Every structure is written in structure tokens, then in C-alpha cells.
Image 1 (cartoon, rainbow, N blue to C red):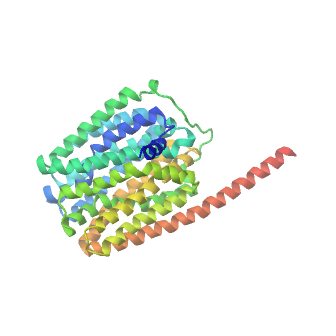
Image 2 (image 1 turned 90 degrees about the vertical axis):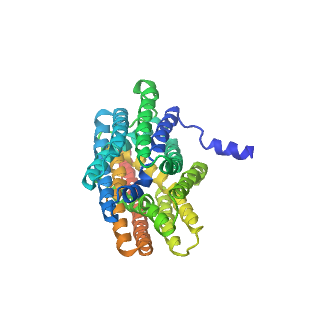
Length: 416
């Protein structure tokens, strides 16, 4: 047992102090975002909105995320990641508290748009900060540590959120979200001020390539949009499925979703370390992750046995454990070709766009066709993403061959 624990601990060795602080800040922030998993339930049960209304509100959720991420990327390249992260955390806390007082459909559309605009400006700044605080050889594990913090926060958040709902009510969630954002901003100010940190890998490119002109990255962007579209069903239609089709309580839903974060906390870092040591292609691993996530929807239609919900959650969890860290690492690696803020913003925008279409489409399909057909449609769409990632592998191999050929020709010219 002691050897097992030592081996587990060794997977965390070599990460910088700044990455650990950034992870703690992320944990505090994400543990408070317990409104998000229960948002569809809050809108339907407390505010009596229809599924169609919820779909449109979630589209504004995604639209705010897209705009905020784009602005965050631009500001990161202009004023730096630290200032963007700090302002984002402070304002997000204020807006979350105010959101509880909005009760009309149009008001909530505007409110959730503003919350996500400010909140998701944090994402590209955080990725650039993570890259700066990490040695090149530790990028993937640093990303994984951040994800562990996020998922540990999401593990605690829904479980605590279920208790808060049953004791205090939904309004308590908004206050906790606001307070935790404020605490995260204070910690950021204390431990990650630019004068107190060590920069390990700050990249400045003399002639940066625009992310929007990078063919391989744009193909990757499309695949990540599809992955986000599929994955985000677990934050909108899946909770409703648990509630309406499988008759779970909010507390049981919170425990099931909390299991996701706890499983990731225990197994993701050892899994990533093992896959890194195996020297597998990052894109091949992302492809495997998307495929497993697709399978998590198929199994829901196979039986009425309640245990299938756990199996589905395990498949999705393992899928995201593989796909997210290696897609993050690929984006960070590719970002060295240009402005890092722009690249990481585009990577984040792929998921923000998913928010616009994923929740709305899922809600509309469930309302019109039911859960069974919706899960089959989601699976087919995920398989399209798998094919796109396989095509990306072909593009990257061709790109590598062209680069090698040009390098050889350059060396010949210099020797002559």
C-alpha cells in the first residue's frame, strides 16, 4: 500500500510551486460553480421555464462564453494574464450573486450572457499562465493537475450543492458561487502577483503565425467543438434524464456527478503519466477519449438497470480524462507558433461555441424526440468528430514531412 501511494505521489513530482498555487485557486473557484450542473433544474423547477426556454438560455450561456473567451485572449496578449485573471474572478463573483434576483426569461438570457462573458475571460489567461509556470516537459502533467483541481471542485460542488438545495434552496448556490470567486481572487493577489512568481517558459515569437491561418489547428478546433457538444450534454440534458427518466433526486444526481470528479482525482494523473511514458500521439489519445465519451451515451439505451448510469458515467469520465489533458497539451504546444493568447482563446472558444449549440439542440431534441433518439444522435455526431481527428492525423503527418524536407533543403544550401 505504501509503495502504491509513493508511486502515485511520484506522478506529481517536478511541478512548479506556481502551478500548485494556480491549481488551488482553480479548485476554490470551481468548487463554487455548483450552480452550473443544477442550472437546467433551477430554471425548470424554480422559475418554471419550459425546456425550449432553457435551451435558449443555455445558448446565451455559450454566446457569453464565446465573447468572453475571445476578449480574454486579446486582453491576455495586450495587458498580460495576471490582470485578466484577477479582474475576471472579482467581477464573476459579483455577477453570480446578482443573477439570483433575475426571474424573467429575457432578463436571465442577458444575465447569464454577462456572467459567462466575464467568467470565461479567465480561461485563455489561465492557460497562458499555466504554460509560463511550467517547464516544457511538464506541460501535460501541469494541465492534468489543473484539471484535477477543476474536477475535485466539481466533485465537491454538486454534492454540496445538492445539500444546499434541499436545506437552503437554490438561492444559496448563487451566494456560494460569488463568495468562492472572491476568495479565489484574494488568493491570486497574495501568491501569484507578478513580482512573486518564477517564469519557466515564457514564449515570445518574432513572426507569430495567426491561429486563424493554421490549417491543422482549425481542423482540431472543429473536432474540439464536436467533443464539447457531446460532453456538455452531461451539464444540461443528462441531469434532466436522471431526474425525469430515471427518477433520481437532486441529491442522488449530485452524488453521481460528484463521482465523476472523485474518479478523476484518484486516477487521472497516474493514467496521464502512463500514457505520456508510452509516447502515444496526443491526437490519437484525444480520438480515443472522444470515442469513449460517445459510448457513454449508447449504453444508456441498452437497459433500464439503474447501474448502467454508473457505467455510462465511468465511460464518459475516462474519455474526458484522456481527451482534455492531451487536447490542452496539443493546443499549448501549437500556440508557440503564434500569439499564445490567440491560440488558447481559439481552443477555449471551441468549447464556448459548443455551449451555444449543445444545450439548446439537446433540449429541443429531448422535447421533440425523447431521450433515446437524442442519445443515438449524439453518438453519431461524436463519431463524426472521431473521423475528423483521424483526418487531422493525416494532415499533421504531411505537415511534418514537408517541414523535414524544407529543413533538409536548407541544410544542403548552407553546406554548399
